[in-house]
Structure formats: C-alpha cells, structure tokens
Amino acid sequence: MSTPLRLGIAGLGTVGTGVIKIIQTHAALLTGRTGRPVTISAVSARTRDKDRGIDLSTYDWEDDPVALATRDDVDVFVELMGGSDGPAKAAVEAAIAAGKDVVTANKAMLAIHGQALAEAAEAAGGVIRFEAAVTGGIPVVKALTEGLAGNQTLRVMGVMNGTCNYILTRMERAGLPYETVFEEADKMGYLEADPTLDVGGIDAGHKLALLASIAFGTRVAFDHMELEGIERISIDDIRHAADMGFRIKLLGVAQMTGRGLEQRMSPCLVPANSPLGQLENAMNMVVLEGDSVGQIVLQGAGAGEGPTASAVMSDVLDIARGFRVSTFGRPAASLERPVPAKATAAAPYYLRMELDDKPGALAKIATVLGESGISIDRMRQYGHSDTTAPVLIVTHRTTRDALDHALQGFAATGVVSSAPVAIRIETV
Ligand code: NAP
Ligand code: HSE
Image (tube, rainbow, N blue to C red):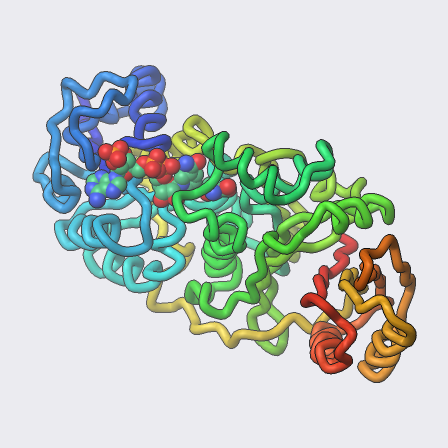
C-alpha cells in the first residue's frame, strides 16, 4: 500500500469535527482520488472529555497543539483552532520549523501574519494552504491561484461574511430592527466569539486582504483596508434602499490602480436584481475579473461544518497528490509591498441623517453639499419626532473625498443631531 498522508488536527470544533467526519466517511473515495490513504495520527483541543459526536478513540491526544504540530508521525498540521495569535500561531510556526506542511482555516492569523508565515514555510520547504479561510466552501483561493493564473486580475469583489448577509436580508424580509436580528443571529450560533469581527467588517476584510494578495501579487495589507461595518444600518435604510430598487450588502472591493491598491469593505447599495443583490441569508458571493477570462461569479456557503471542512479537505488532498503551490500564488519574497490608495472612483451616495426640526436646517445641509461640489439627485424628509426630523438624500455621482468634506461640513452646521449614515451606491 502507498504511504499514507498523516494529519495532526488541532481544533475539534465546527470545522475540525467536520474534517474528521469527511475523513472517516469518505476514506475509500479520498484514497481513490489521491492514490494514498489520508489518516489522522493525533488530535488536540482544549477539553479532552467533551462529547463531539465523533469517534476519536483511534487517534492519539495531545493537550498541547505545539506538541501535536511537531510529532514525527504528522506530515500535515491542520490548524482549526482560530485566533490571530496565541496557540494557533505558535503551533503553525512550530509545524513549519519542524518541516511540516500546514492547512489552516484561520483568516485572522493569515491576514496579520501571513507574509511572515509564508516566508518561513517556503524557507523550510513547506506549504501553507488556506482555502477554508476565505468564504468557507467556495473554492475561491484555488480559482484565483490556479484557474485564473494566466490572467491579470482586474478586480476582486464580493459578499464575504455570511453573518452580515444574514442580518441584512433578515432585517429586510422580516422588517425587524438590527438589534433584534443581531440577537437572533447570536442564538443561531452565527456570530464569532467576538461579534465585532463579523458586524464590524473585520472578518470579511481579512478575507478580502488575503484574496487581494493572490490577485495582485502584493503582501497581505489588511492594515490598509478602508473598513466599515453594518452596525449603523437601520431598518429605515433597508426600506429606503428597497424603495429605490436596491439592497444593502457588506461589499468588499479590491483593485490595483495606477495610484496603488484600493481595498474597501463597507456597506453598499447594490441593484436588487443583480446577482449580489439577490444573495440571500448567510450565503457568500465572490466576483473575480480577469483580463482574459472576463467576469467569474462564485456563490456558496461561506461557513458551516460541511462547507468549511470541504475546503480544508481540498487543501489536504492537494498535498496528498503532491501538488505544491506558494501560499499566495507566487514566492513570498517576491510579493510587493502595496502602496495603499483610497478609492477615488465617483459613485452616487445615499445619506440619512437626523436634523433639528427647525427653519433653515435642510437649507444648511443643501448648502454644505453645494459647497462640496455635490449635486443632489433626491431629497426627502420623512416623519419626525418633537424635535428632530429624519432626512434622506441621494446624491449624483461624487467622490469619497467630496463626501468626506460634506460630512465634516454637516457637523459644523449645528443642525445635525446624530452622525449621518453615508452608503455608496454600486452599480455592479
Ligand atoms: P470552534 O467551533 O470555536 O472550535 C475551535 C476549536 O479549537 C475547539 O475545538 C477548541 O477546543 C479548540 N481550541 C481553542 N483554543 C485552543 C487551545 N488553546 N488549544 C487547543 N485547542 C483549542 O471554531 P470553528 O468554527 O471550528 O473555527 C475554527 C477555525 O476555522 C477558525 O480559524 C475560524 O475562523 C475558521 N473558520 C470557521 C468557519 C465556520 O463556519 N465555523 C468558516 C471558515 C473559517 P474545545 O472544543 O475543547 O473548546
Ligand atoms: N463569521 C464568518 C461569517 C464565518 O459569518 O461568514 C466564516 O468565516
């Protein structure tokens, strides 16, 4: 029989148990596809005696993930614990130093330490694979690294956080406020342990930063991302967007321009009848644009046991087959440090603000917009309390710089009672 590929799996939560289920149920299929058995030598998690609904009795147990990562009978260290630093990073570093290959689902770790880890792995002759780290079951890392390798990538964009998409679509469908749906998402187990990672756009930003590195041959530059979450999106915003034929999505866009690398992850209005606008619930969608291929749209489950384990297994099987590729699609040392560029492409913007309900308030806002060079497409005051009135404005196409100038101007008018919500309208 041919030599087995022996795994050490650290992390037996949602993803780890999913991976073990695939290995246990599809043993023959995996061997048939790679020509060698995929086996598990040892596993690790925090609590040994937790019932995980799977049989772990034939695997050795290690309390310490670093000890697991460096065992002689482990060829591939599979890191499924999570966390940008701490045990995950320590164990991955130890695995690399011990000459192991690494498969991980940990976008937080790679978004921050990806360059250093990739350089270390390549120096040691190992590989780091991370299909599961970006949009769960959607094979987008493979698509960019392999399927589109002959293209110059023009743009990467998409909805990359299922929790945010669930919250936004559920708010619209059920007419519920953000806070109620956030609690629902929590009860359904959708939220990360630190929910800010989801609703603050950070998790999706990590994923976009990893894709941008592969797409544009640049070092992962999460620090340079323009980042805004969905916490301030209200049911009113969602209703206004729907009235205008749009849906609000947490949309990521990365592109290389003559000025540098633009990366932004922020709520946007997208046409309701576009593929992105029709993306429901916790699904993810990634749109890739290459100079030869044109546009590719990938859609699927961005999280969950099965989809994420499926992605982990694709990396494991590549290693079993002997297919080895640099972490970000080219030697880590050749990845250029990107020049961060602010998005300058003009777009219409949706603005919502609460104004003091007194004569001249709206005129002051209109004046600030005019002085910022921003033309108003539509403007509406709807309902009001005893003292304030909500106002909705849609601008003609303008730049973010002009908008920021206007937002500063609004603050100086003394008639705006809460910070305005400003959402870019994308005609994707
Ligand atoms: P999870 O359900 O919270 O499981 C984490 C596992 O890691 C648990 O088994 C936990 O042990 C173990 N662990 C945590 N700290 C540890 C430590 N110090 N030493 C040893 N073991 C430790 O997490 P998950 O959802 O499976 O996510 C795992 C990774 O996949 C993360 O990087 C996550 O971002 C990524 N990911 C997850 C999804 C998803 O849908 N869940 C999708 C894409 C990517 P105990 O069980 O004993 O507590
Ligand atoms: N919290 C993430 C999401 C999990 O909602 O998409 C997968 O990375």
